[in-house]
Length: 497
Image (cartoon, rainbow, N blue to C red; front, side):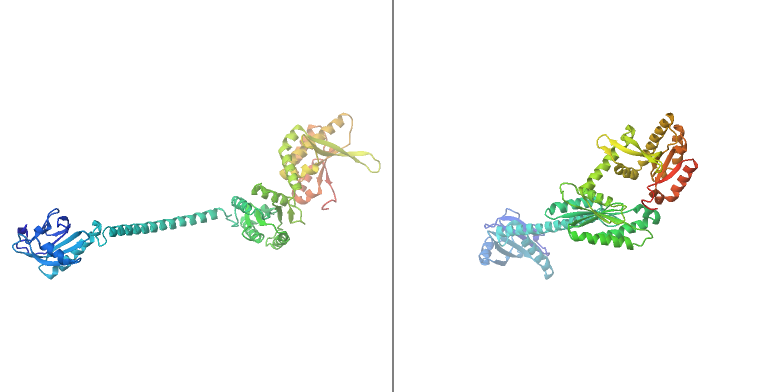
């Protein structure tokens, strides 16, 4: 072993951990080669076997250093330092030729000390190791927490972006009010969360809005919608209020019930319509449904508010209407009419009665007027006042008018067969019929089919029809008169004359 170091001039460092009997348990550092291996007695490194025992006694709980002669190294001397570490001993054997090797020596010693905690041999023994483990866990926890915080931050950012997207999807792109679906969902939630608060649904509609788009363009129509939506935002107000554009020109507002609100709403809508900057009359109608049945959907609540709106359309003097059950019954009746009108016409449930026309001076009957009644299989006799407005609105009136004309022609044909001549029958022509360009031809075919003359069938047109589309009507009347039909004005003087 000594021969390995003969004549060597470079630095030598040997660091080992020994037990109390100097048996080497672990070689920590050996430069340039191993003085002794693990399991050997460290005292065999030196010529004096008891030198380490004496050094240990000198250390007195700290450390002690002495220059000793190495075994078999031709009398080469080296420094030996011992230090008690718990129940073990740290042994350092080192030799330097010059001071420039001091940093390397210091580094080697520090590295040895750094390795002690990992071997349960630190100044606090096992406790030091446990502290180190706890510290490592704390560092790991901090790292995990930092990572979790970063993930949470990213998640919150994703949620914020998702909420922004949802908010965009819930808003009408033209007015920035809620969409129909979003309004129903949020209104349902507000109503459930506030069971003791009274609420109203306010429906708002612009009459003849399509004319605005047709006459002034879509941009003007969209601007009208935006301006009205700004007006409606003032109607509700507060956390429990919502405003939405349901579809087209229909708006809805959910607001806590306040009687004083509606006088203000009526005035506001009046000022809006009267002062709006379009060269056309703007009519805005509002319907109010006070929510009494909370077990129905918000969509049905809105329907009831819109029923109230429909009840005042065309009435110039009214801008506001309150829903009541009579409106609902009327709506249900109209729906029943719509559902059964075609089948009833095919079954000839519509009956034609004749009202005589008498000459006042002589009492002689000079003609008759055909009147229609509906003998409904479920509802019984229905007045024309109930079904005629519905038919005029949906266009079915043309089919009914042609049916009545055909029935009148059948009666005239029977009269002529029995020798009755010169008693014409007048039939009503709806203002909606004039939009059928082939109306004169249709009447001509009827007359020809039943072998009649045009003078046998008088056509009565209400005076209101002349106002709704005078140019179209006058053109049709002129063609009818040219064909020989007698055209009369019905309800003369009752309206516009």
